[in-house]
Amino acid sequence: MKPVLHHHTLVSGLVLVCLIVLPAGRLTGQDASGLAVYEEQLRLRLDEQLPEVREVGYDAGGWFSFALFNYDDGSASKHRMLRQYQLRAWARVNIRGVHQFYVRGLLDWEDWNSGDNPDTPHDDEFFQRIERAWYQFDLGQMLRQQTGKAPPFGLKLKVGRAYARIGTALVLSMPLDLIQLDVSAGDWDVKGFLGTTIRHRSNIDRSFAVSEDQERCLWGIEVAYNGLDRHRPFAYFMSNYDRTTPDPRSATQRYDYTSHYIGLGSVGTILSPNLRYSAEIVGEYGKTFSDGAVDRQDRICAMAIDVMLEYLFKTKTSPRLSFEYLFGSGDNDRSVSAVSTVGGNQAGTTDHAFNAFGFRDTGIAFSPDIANLHTYILGASFFPLEDHDLFRRLEVGTKAFFYHKATNGAISDTTGTNSSRWVGWEWDVYCDWRITSDLTWTIRYGAFQPRSAFSDRSCRQFLYTAVSYSF
Image 1 (cartoon, helix red, strand yellow):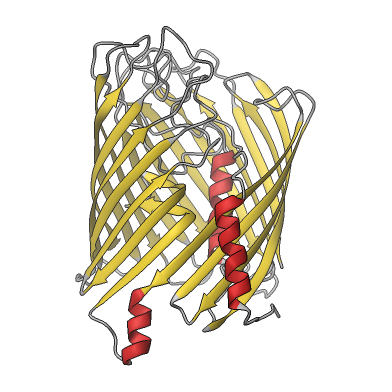
Image 2 (cartoon, helix red, strand yellow; image 1 turned 135 degrees about the vertical axis):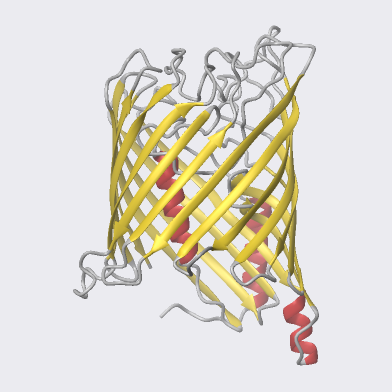
């Protein structure tokens, strides 16, 4: 049983101090690898285990996780091994649902095999950072308590370091230091936010001088309609203003990728309550410095599409089938990379490569950005031993990915520069087991087979396994 305390003033003050003075630390993660897929899976599991909101009280706890990564780095033609130990601790204060404070810190030790760390000559690294630290005020809850009636609208204000998402996460899915306002009135939900990226987080621009750091200001607004039985349509606008300082500076190259996004989509069910869908289309425009440019920016004109269908069978073992189509526009004159300024768009031309801040599972072994790719994903999973108490929450699944270039230009993988559009395919298998409410285990293996877009067609493999314990 976790403690419930009533010293609100002291605890609230401590949380606010954490919000203000504790450093962010460095966020790790390797470009073009399945580490991002694992981190997203872990994030979802942690967010699902947020403590129940008590009327008045204080809760605290934590997680310990150990993960092992064994993979082929295609860009370096090297086999790498990493052991990752992470300890997280959280605290939450709730005052009658009106005021909520939440803070979560992380201690992270990364133990690489000798010479395997791609970011630094040192094999092992230790990081400490504040992952989440926010305060939320709920005006609707306060009015409900004061009047005894449900107010005609709801309003929540969140300030601090929190996870930000817009649409279906195609354009934005990352932590920000932000101010966020959520308003609900009738069948309408409106969300607006203004935030900055966290220092030392990997940049969407993979150029060497800016790849390990980004300073960006993002703001956006999303409107969703809840008045339909099976559909929740939404529309949004988001802007990204680049303030990143390159290191080292260069007299022959400037960096500034400032972009704006307009998106439309919907989530819900079609034909049957068991058939879920999500669909989103987004257009991107803005300004960027092209390869070798120092005094003139070129236009950005790009787009992306995501369509997903998932059928849930209401039968024994709860099987599930899914199909997803992802498209990110590409640029025909990008010679080396679809996601970098250096080796990217040719100066004096419009940049048609789609780049944003979202997340999609595109396979752990290849794990490309969606720019300049048609990606087709087939998935299946089930709970094979649900009749046995110990294995009731053991899920086994598989995904197959097929990749095809949208243009003859570059993709995010800088080794796939051949003019052929047939990129390759990947097969992943996984197992997720919630052993108890506090203990989980996961394993995932992926193999990517490059095809004619690559000169080196050696199969790339990626394996991770992890155990997480919450307390």
